Length: 119
Image: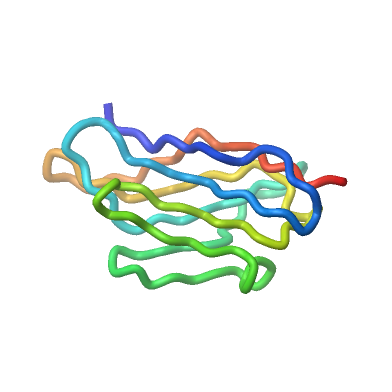
């Protein structure tokens, strides 16, 4: 079964750091472009960072300079390193990625992971 599995997250103090991982699994798969989304309490799910298959990255203004998206294609994994965390970074984080499996590209969501930034 092809899926994106997230790990990381948790609780951090303001100014702290956390790292999220998003791994494509389920047999012979390759991961293409991946986006990270954040859904704050009571808010819509917003895209905050993206990386394409060549490694080109984009960030929304609120996280630029603090968050870094990267990929390890050999491990079919995309990371989101979050530094200088702020309380407004609190929310559920989701990865959304294109996965190649059995000759077909499909988009998958990770299961989501909670990030809480609080003193």
